[in-house]
Image (cartoon, rainbow, N blue to C red):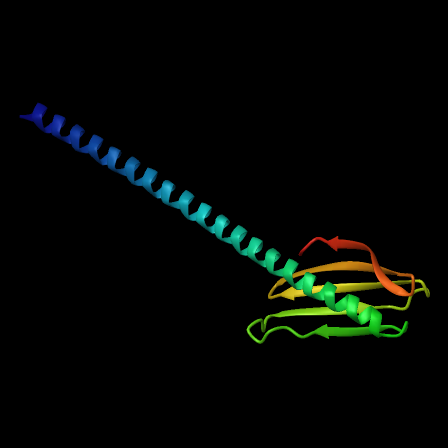
Length: 140
């Protein structure tokens, strides 16, 4: 009878060990999946913000071109009006005085915690301000 008890004890110990290992494997798999979902969620959020910032910079670029044509050569700053449903977003255009034939403006777009900017240079050609260069600064 003692041999049976020892064998039953070993079988229970082995079953317990297998159960603990299986629980550990399942727990590790769940942890890995949770981390992957979190990383993907953050990446998706960042990509969505970058797309929105590009749209805001486009709107700011159009407003900057109109402002360069309308405003004198002195320094100025302007905030672009956005739709009311974009309450966390803003677009600001800053111009600092430059020479008579070239004007440089910086367009800064913000959407929540994300921000991007671009520097646009306009040159006077045939009596009109034409876009010469655009430098996109990396979103941050």
